[in-house]
Image (tube, rainbow, N blue to C red; front, side, top):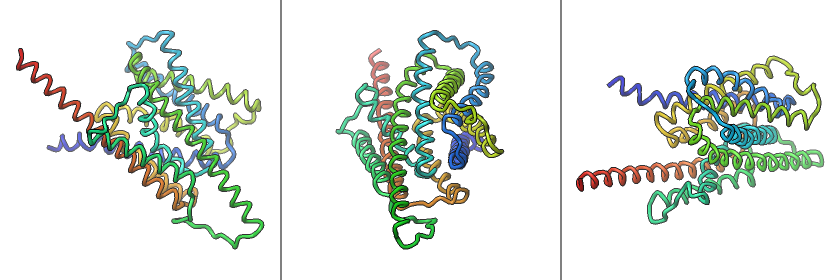
Length: 346
Protein backbone atom coordinates (compact mmCIF):
# COMPACT_ATOMS: atom_id res chain seq x y z
CA UNK A 1 0.00 0.00 0.00
CA UNK A 2 2.81 2.42 0.95
CA UNK A 3 4.72 1.49 -2.22
CA UNK A 4 1.67 2.24 -4.41
CA UNK A 5 1.14 5.58 -2.65
CA UNK A 6 4.80 6.47 -3.24
CA UNK A 7 4.62 5.51 -6.93
CA UNK A 8 1.43 7.55 -7.35
CA UNK A 9 2.75 10.74 -5.75
CA UNK A 10 6.34 10.65 -7.03
CA UNK A 11 5.47 12.09 -10.52
CA UNK A 12 3.31 14.75 -8.84
CA UNK A 13 6.15 15.85 -6.55
CA UNK A 14 8.62 15.80 -9.47
CA UNK A 15 6.41 18.12 -11.57
CA UNK A 16 5.89 20.51 -8.63
CA UNK A 17 9.68 20.72 -8.12
CA UNK A 18 10.25 21.14 -11.89
CA UNK A 19 7.82 24.07 -12.11
CA UNK A 20 9.31 25.69 -9.01
CA UNK A 21 12.82 25.36 -10.52
CA UNK A 22 11.65 26.82 -13.85
CA UNK A 23 9.92 29.72 -12.08
CA UNK A 24 13.24 30.62 -10.41
CA UNK A 25 14.89 30.52 -13.86
CA UNK A 26 12.27 32.92 -15.28
CA UNK A 27 12.45 35.42 -12.42
CA UNK A 28 16.25 35.64 -12.39
CA UNK A 29 16.41 35.84 -16.19
CA UNK A 30 14.08 38.85 -15.94
CA UNK A 31 16.38 40.36 -13.30
CA UNK A 32 19.56 40.09 -15.45
CA UNK A 33 17.65 41.34 -18.52
CA UNK A 34 16.65 44.42 -16.50
CA UNK A 35 20.36 44.78 -15.71
CA UNK A 36 21.12 45.10 -19.44
CA UNK A 37 22.40 41.61 -20.36
CA UNK A 38 21.98 40.64 -24.01
CA UNK A 39 19.33 38.04 -24.98
CA UNK A 40 21.50 36.06 -27.42
CA UNK A 41 24.42 35.95 -24.97
CA UNK A 42 22.12 34.40 -22.35
CA UNK A 43 20.82 31.90 -24.91
CA UNK A 44 24.31 30.92 -26.14
CA UNK A 45 25.75 30.28 -22.68
CA UNK A 46 22.58 28.54 -21.46
CA UNK A 47 22.44 26.07 -24.35
CA UNK A 48 26.19 25.43 -24.25
CA UNK A 49 25.96 24.49 -20.56
CA UNK A 50 22.92 22.26 -21.24
CA UNK A 51 24.76 20.51 -24.07
CA UNK A 52 27.86 19.89 -21.92
CA UNK A 53 25.68 18.56 -19.09
CA UNK A 54 23.52 16.22 -21.23
CA UNK A 55 26.32 14.83 -23.46
CA UNK A 56 27.80 12.49 -20.77
CA UNK A 57 24.29 11.28 -19.79
CA UNK A 58 23.58 10.46 -23.45
CA UNK A 59 26.91 8.59 -23.72
CA UNK A 60 26.11 6.49 -20.65
CA UNK A 61 22.44 5.64 -21.30
CA UNK A 62 22.23 5.77 -25.11
CA UNK A 63 25.46 4.28 -26.41
CA UNK A 64 23.63 2.28 -29.08
CA UNK A 65 22.24 5.41 -30.80
CA UNK A 66 23.32 5.93 -34.42
CA UNK A 67 22.69 9.11 -36.38
CA UNK A 68 22.59 9.86 -40.13
CA UNK A 69 22.77 13.05 -42.21
CA UNK A 70 18.99 13.46 -42.57
CA UNK A 71 18.51 13.25 -38.79
CA UNK A 72 21.25 15.85 -38.23
CA UNK A 73 19.47 18.23 -40.63
CA UNK A 74 16.17 17.64 -38.82
CA UNK A 75 17.78 18.33 -35.44
CA UNK A 76 19.45 21.49 -36.77
CA UNK A 77 16.10 22.82 -38.03
CA UNK A 78 14.41 21.70 -34.81
CA UNK A 79 17.02 23.61 -32.76
CA UNK A 80 16.53 26.75 -34.88
CA UNK A 81 12.72 26.73 -34.55
CA UNK A 82 12.23 25.26 -31.07
CA UNK A 83 15.18 26.63 -29.14
CA UNK A 84 17.04 29.53 -30.79
CA UNK A 85 14.07 31.51 -32.16
CA UNK A 86 11.61 30.44 -29.44
CA UNK A 87 13.84 31.32 -26.49
CA UNK A 88 15.13 34.53 -28.11
CA UNK A 89 11.57 35.77 -28.73
CA UNK A 90 10.58 34.73 -25.19
CA UNK A 91 13.48 36.65 -23.64
CA UNK A 92 12.62 39.79 -25.64
CA UNK A 93 8.96 39.46 -24.59
CA UNK A 94 10.06 38.89 -20.99
CA UNK A 95 12.14 42.08 -21.05
CA UNK A 96 9.23 44.18 -22.37
CA UNK A 97 6.60 42.75 -19.98
CA UNK A 98 6.88 40.82 -16.70
CA UNK A 99 7.75 37.25 -15.68
CA UNK A 100 4.15 36.51 -14.59
CA UNK A 101 2.67 37.87 -17.83
CA UNK A 102 5.18 35.94 -19.99
CA UNK A 103 4.44 32.65 -18.22
CA UNK A 104 0.70 33.21 -18.78
CA UNK A 105 1.35 33.08 -22.52
CA UNK A 106 3.12 29.71 -22.25
CA UNK A 107 -0.23 28.15 -21.28
CA UNK A 108 -1.44 28.83 -24.85
CA UNK A 109 1.17 26.49 -26.37
CA UNK A 110 -0.97 23.27 -26.12
CA UNK A 111 -3.87 25.11 -27.81
CA UNK A 112 -1.71 26.57 -30.61
CA UNK A 113 -0.19 23.11 -31.12
CA UNK A 114 -3.67 21.61 -31.41
CA UNK A 115 -4.75 24.24 -34.00
CA UNK A 116 -1.56 23.79 -36.07
CA UNK A 117 -1.88 19.98 -35.96
CA UNK A 118 -5.40 20.00 -37.49
CA UNK A 119 -4.39 20.75 -41.13
CA UNK A 120 -1.74 17.99 -41.01
CA UNK A 121 -4.24 15.39 -39.76
CA UNK A 122 -2.33 14.92 -36.48
CA UNK A 123 -5.45 15.94 -34.56
CA UNK A 124 -9.11 15.27 -35.34
CA UNK A 125 -12.28 16.88 -34.02
CA UNK A 126 -15.71 15.24 -33.87
CA UNK A 127 -18.41 17.70 -32.85
CA UNK A 128 -20.75 14.77 -32.09
CA UNK A 129 -18.69 13.72 -29.06
CA UNK A 130 -18.18 15.53 -25.74
CA UNK A 131 -14.41 15.34 -26.15
CA UNK A 132 -14.57 17.11 -29.54
CA UNK A 133 -16.82 19.87 -28.17
CA UNK A 134 -14.50 20.32 -25.15
CA UNK A 135 -11.46 20.67 -27.45
CA UNK A 136 -13.14 23.33 -29.61
CA UNK A 137 -14.57 25.24 -26.61
CA UNK A 138 -11.22 25.09 -24.80
CA UNK A 139 -9.47 26.46 -27.90
CA UNK A 140 -11.82 29.46 -28.14
CA UNK A 141 -11.66 30.19 -24.39
CA UNK A 142 -7.85 30.05 -24.43
CA UNK A 143 -7.59 32.35 -27.47
CA UNK A 144 -10.05 34.76 -25.80
CA UNK A 145 -7.87 34.78 -22.68
CA UNK A 146 -4.73 35.46 -24.75
CA UNK A 147 -6.45 38.40 -26.51
CA UNK A 148 -7.54 39.78 -23.13
CA UNK A 149 -3.94 39.54 -21.87
CA UNK A 150 -2.77 41.62 -24.85
CA UNK A 151 -5.55 44.18 -25.15
CA UNK A 152 -6.50 44.83 -21.52
CA UNK A 153 -4.02 45.70 -18.80
CA UNK A 154 -6.40 47.03 -16.16
CA UNK A 155 -5.68 48.38 -12.72
CA UNK A 156 -2.82 47.07 -10.51
CA UNK A 157 -4.11 44.64 -7.86
CA UNK A 158 -1.59 43.17 -5.43
CA UNK A 159 1.31 45.63 -5.56
CA UNK A 160 -0.05 48.99 -6.71
CA UNK A 161 2.70 51.60 -6.83
CA UNK A 162 1.96 55.21 -6.06
CA UNK A 163 0.54 56.92 -9.14
CA UNK A 164 0.65 60.75 -9.06
CA UNK A 165 -2.05 62.89 -10.65
CA UNK A 166 -1.83 62.65 -14.43
CA UNK A 167 0.13 65.47 -15.98
CA UNK A 168 2.36 66.17 -18.96
CA UNK A 169 5.12 63.99 -17.52
CA UNK A 170 3.07 60.93 -16.47
CA UNK A 171 0.94 60.62 -19.63
CA UNK A 172 3.86 59.94 -22.02
CA UNK A 173 5.32 57.48 -19.46
CA UNK A 174 2.00 55.59 -19.33
CA UNK A 175 1.73 55.55 -23.14
CA UNK A 176 5.32 54.28 -23.40
CA UNK A 177 4.58 51.52 -20.86
CA UNK A 178 1.50 50.40 -22.84
CA UNK A 179 3.48 50.40 -26.09
CA UNK A 180 6.16 48.18 -24.51
CA UNK A 181 3.44 45.87 -23.18
CA UNK A 182 1.92 45.44 -26.67
CA UNK A 183 5.34 44.92 -28.34
CA UNK A 184 6.22 42.34 -25.69
CA UNK A 185 2.89 40.56 -26.29
CA UNK A 186 3.62 40.31 -30.04
CA UNK A 187 7.03 38.75 -29.33
CA UNK A 188 5.42 36.27 -26.89
CA UNK A 189 2.76 35.25 -29.45
CA UNK A 190 5.51 34.62 -32.01
CA UNK A 191 7.42 32.62 -29.37
CA UNK A 192 4.39 30.40 -28.65
CA UNK A 193 3.74 29.85 -32.37
CA UNK A 194 7.35 28.77 -32.97
CA UNK A 195 7.29 26.51 -29.90
CA UNK A 196 4.01 24.95 -31.03
CA UNK A 197 5.43 24.25 -34.49
CA UNK A 198 8.49 22.71 -32.81
CA UNK A 199 6.27 20.02 -31.21
CA UNK A 200 5.10 19.00 -34.69
CA UNK A 201 8.70 18.85 -35.96
CA UNK A 202 9.80 17.00 -32.83
CA UNK A 203 7.22 14.28 -33.42
CA UNK A 204 8.96 13.46 -36.71
CA UNK A 205 12.39 13.67 -35.02
CA UNK A 206 11.17 11.34 -32.23
CA UNK A 207 10.05 8.70 -34.72
CA UNK A 208 13.29 8.82 -36.69
CA UNK A 209 15.68 9.20 -33.72
CA UNK A 210 14.03 8.02 -30.45
CA UNK A 211 16.92 8.87 -28.12
CA UNK A 212 15.80 11.76 -25.90
CA UNK A 213 19.09 12.50 -24.14
CA UNK A 214 21.20 12.35 -27.31
CA UNK A 215 18.73 14.39 -29.38
CA UNK A 216 18.45 17.06 -26.66
CA UNK A 217 22.24 17.29 -26.27
CA UNK A 218 22.63 17.72 -30.05
CA UNK A 219 19.70 20.17 -30.09
CA UNK A 220 21.33 22.28 -27.37
CA UNK A 221 24.69 22.16 -29.17
CA UNK A 222 23.16 23.40 -32.45
CA UNK A 223 21.19 26.09 -30.60
CA UNK A 224 24.37 27.35 -28.90
CA UNK A 225 26.15 27.62 -32.28
CA UNK A 226 23.15 29.33 -33.95
CA UNK A 227 22.80 31.84 -31.09
CA UNK A 228 26.54 32.60 -31.13
CA UNK A 229 26.51 33.24 -34.91
CA UNK A 230 23.44 35.48 -34.63
CA UNK A 231 25.07 37.37 -31.75
CA UNK A 232 28.24 37.97 -33.79
CA UNK A 233 26.24 39.11 -36.85
CA UNK A 234 23.93 41.47 -34.94
CA UNK A 235 26.31 42.98 -32.38
CA UNK A 236 29.94 42.43 -33.45
CA UNK A 237 30.90 43.56 -29.99
CA UNK A 238 33.09 41.33 -27.79
CA UNK A 239 31.99 43.21 -24.67
CA UNK A 240 28.55 41.53 -24.97
CA UNK A 241 30.13 38.15 -24.11
CA UNK A 242 31.50 39.29 -20.75
CA UNK A 243 29.43 38.26 -17.73
CA UNK A 244 29.29 41.01 -15.12
CA UNK A 245 28.84 40.07 -11.48
CA UNK A 246 27.88 36.93 -9.57
CA UNK A 247 24.14 37.26 -10.36
CA UNK A 248 24.67 36.97 -14.12
CA UNK A 249 27.11 34.05 -13.78
CA UNK A 250 24.91 32.10 -11.33
CA UNK A 251 21.74 32.74 -13.37
CA UNK A 252 23.36 31.50 -16.60
CA UNK A 253 24.76 28.37 -14.92
CA UNK A 254 21.48 27.63 -13.13
CA UNK A 255 19.30 28.20 -16.23
CA UNK A 256 21.55 25.95 -18.35
CA UNK A 257 22.12 23.18 -15.81
CA UNK A 258 18.65 23.11 -14.23
CA UNK A 259 16.30 24.87 -16.69
CA UNK A 260 17.56 23.23 -19.90
CA UNK A 261 19.13 20.12 -18.33
CA UNK A 262 17.66 18.54 -15.19
CA UNK A 263 14.13 19.86 -15.73
CA UNK A 264 13.99 18.40 -19.23
CA UNK A 265 15.16 15.00 -17.95
CA UNK A 266 12.54 15.12 -15.17
CA UNK A 267 9.74 16.09 -17.58
CA UNK A 268 10.77 13.36 -20.03
CA UNK A 269 10.58 10.85 -17.13
CA UNK A 270 7.08 12.09 -16.19
CA UNK A 271 5.90 11.80 -19.80
CA UNK A 272 7.10 8.17 -19.80
CA UNK A 273 5.42 7.44 -16.46
CA UNK A 274 2.10 9.30 -16.81
CA UNK A 275 1.94 10.64 -20.38
CA UNK A 276 2.05 14.14 -21.94
CA UNK A 277 -1.45 15.16 -20.73
CA UNK A 278 -0.45 14.65 -17.08
CA UNK A 279 2.81 16.59 -17.59
CA UNK A 280 1.14 19.49 -19.44
CA UNK A 281 -1.53 19.78 -16.74
CA UNK A 282 1.07 21.18 -14.30
CA UNK A 283 1.95 24.16 -16.57
CA UNK A 284 -0.22 26.68 -14.62
CA UNK A 285 1.85 25.94 -11.49
CA UNK A 286 4.77 27.69 -13.22
CA UNK A 287 2.74 30.88 -13.53
CA UNK A 288 1.60 30.73 -9.89
CA UNK A 289 5.16 30.25 -8.59
CA UNK A 290 6.43 33.03 -10.85
CA UNK A 291 3.69 35.41 -9.65
CA UNK A 292 4.77 34.92 -6.02
CA UNK A 293 8.51 35.25 -6.81
CA UNK A 294 7.82 38.19 -9.15
CA UNK A 295 6.08 40.02 -6.32
CA UNK A 296 8.67 39.15 -3.63
CA UNK A 297 11.93 39.52 -5.60
CA UNK A 298 11.22 41.90 -8.51
CA UNK A 299 8.31 43.73 -6.79
CA UNK A 300 6.43 43.85 -10.11
CA UNK A 301 2.82 45.00 -10.25
CA UNK A 302 0.12 42.39 -10.99
CA UNK A 303 -2.71 43.76 -13.13
CA UNK A 304 -6.41 42.86 -13.34
CA UNK A 305 -6.14 42.03 -17.06
CA UNK A 306 -3.29 39.58 -16.38
CA UNK A 307 -5.29 37.75 -13.69
CA UNK A 308 -8.56 37.49 -15.68
CA UNK A 309 -6.73 36.61 -18.92
CA UNK A 310 -4.65 33.97 -17.12
CA UNK A 311 -7.77 32.34 -15.62
CA UNK A 312 -9.35 32.11 -19.10
CA UNK A 313 -6.15 30.74 -20.68
CA UNK A 314 -5.72 28.09 -17.97
CA UNK A 315 -9.42 27.14 -18.12
CA UNK A 316 -9.24 26.77 -21.91
CA UNK A 317 -6.09 24.69 -21.68
CA UNK A 318 -7.68 22.30 -19.16
CA UNK A 319 -10.81 21.96 -21.34
CA UNK A 320 -8.61 21.00 -24.27
CA UNK A 321 -6.54 18.56 -22.19
CA UNK A 322 -9.72 17.01 -20.74
CA UNK A 323 -11.10 16.54 -24.25
CA UNK A 324 -7.87 14.89 -25.38
CA UNK A 325 -7.76 12.56 -22.36
CA UNK A 326 -11.40 11.50 -22.93
CA UNK A 327 -10.62 10.92 -26.60
CA UNK A 328 -7.73 8.64 -25.65
CA UNK A 329 -9.94 6.72 -23.23
CA UNK A 330 -12.53 6.19 -25.98
CA UNK A 331 -9.84 5.03 -28.43
CA UNK A 332 -8.49 2.64 -25.77
CA UNK A 333 -11.98 1.17 -25.18
CA UNK A 334 -12.51 0.71 -28.93
CA UNK A 335 -9.17 -1.10 -29.23
CA UNK A 336 -10.10 -3.43 -26.34
CA UNK A 337 -13.54 -4.13 -27.84
CA UNK A 338 -12.04 -4.86 -31.26
CA UNK A 339 -9.44 -7.22 -29.78
CA UNK A 340 -12.20 -9.04 -27.84
CA UNK A 341 -14.25 -9.44 -31.04
CA UNK A 342 -11.19 -10.84 -32.85
CA UNK A 343 -10.66 -13.37 -30.06
CA UNK A 344 -14.32 -14.42 -30.21
CA UNK A 345 -14.09 -14.86 -33.98
CA UNK A 346 -10.99 -17.05 -33.67
